[in-house]
Image (tube, rainbow, N blue to C red; front, side, top):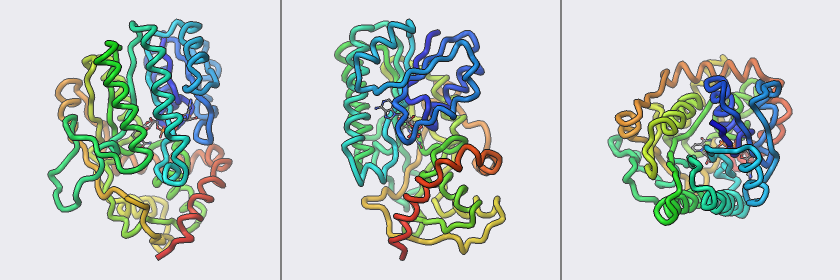
Length: 339
Ligand SMILES: NC(=O)c1ccc[n+]([C@@H]2O[C@H](COP(=O)([O-])OP(=O)(O)OC[C@H]3O[C@@H](n4cnc5c(N)ncnc54)[C@H](O)[C@@H]3O)[C@@H](O)[C@H]2O)c1
């Protein structure tokens, strides 16, 4: 297989690229990435000496360069991770989200119209479904849940999902989609809840928590997300969507307190701050379809994975130290709004 991975220098994309290179050693892999603040070529350092791996710095909105890369590398499979991904940044400045998530996906789809034999997998998010109530623990998102995006980020991802489905229906491109819940694990930029909490706790800095911290997310370890995408490429039906979750439904405050416990740090580091505008209360995933059709199942419990993740950040301070100023800038913004 000649596989192209967009956004392969970001958090999930780089984990997926390394996963793929280690598992499918005969495949040629090309990462196509713009290297925004969230893209870091160092995430792929394990592969620098691998002759089957190559990297192209490029914007997915640049359809010409994207097409040239497909042709030059004789690509037959594309996994599309590239996106602007931080909800708070989308609230501050939505334009980059429209540019990359909507226009970028559109340009890729236009290239696919010309190369209809290429297998395409589009990575999406649970956030397209809006929010679930806190007082109905049985309510979960499934493949049939109606879209109800509530932030510029989720609206841009929803638009890209609709475009992919439209191209499947209209132009018969060979595509699948997955909607996954919140990821955590190595190489996550320290602006997102788990790495922000870990890196600031290690340095004994205050940890901002939105509102009462009772917003519930279904946390999935990035390795389980990679496994889910691998199974979709292997066994997924063309044109179908698959929900991927982690059995990791927990409120944010629980996650923060677990991290503090693992690092032997006091809960007094927690500072409650004004809630995010339009903050979704709860996400939860019903991934019965992925389980029954693909055999997908998260491999380890959340507590074990969280422990491993904390240890990874403890052991890899060289990786996150140069990125920490940006995480701190974001955290200081939240802390100006303490309650
Ligand atoms: N992080 C999560 O919890 C989560 C959950 C569900 C779905 N997703 C989806 O998974 C995908 C990857 O998320 P992530 O957290 O790894 O993101 P990330 O922000 O860590 O990485 C995004 C990558 O895309 C690249 N990129 C951005 N704009 C680009 C452009 N115009 N052209 C080419 N490359 C560009 C960046 O340089 C970066 O390497 C996204 O599509 C996201 O919506 C993420």
